[in-house]
Image (tube, rainbow, N blue to C red):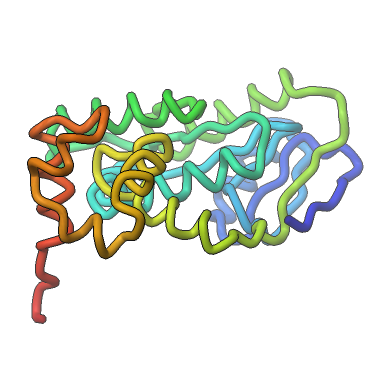
Length: 212
């Protein structure tokens, strides 16, 4: 993991974030620095934050991106949070959203909600007043994963799994191929895997890509 120390800006903003929100932060008195961040959209002291519009939050639950990004936040920063921006309407069931919230909490990641980009800027500016006085450390290059970590991360991205259960599944089945070929009954032999969770794992491994 390649890191760099900065001379204590209030907030570091990823270069891909909208110019609009940078201007809003400056108008709220925040001293910002723009950098290309490998992980997170904003860094305030030791806190890393990812900003997601509500539609993206929903789609990232479905395709597993949310949990891969959350894992990267956890691996690279001491404190981390995700801000969900906008009004969520349909797309993902309340049960799936609740499960995602619980999983993020289990990963040590706070979840915050804002109505729009203006409120997001207000939240970020307020958080700069609370940050540690130590210099800000940002991640410019992701820490390379070992082969074992790559396999665990791939299994952890399955719905309703996560890192702890991924390790248990791999301990039981050995490889992703063996896991993909497991029956529901065999999956349910693993501690923490009930009928619903086993069904979701099998559903993913047997899903067809549209157009294939």
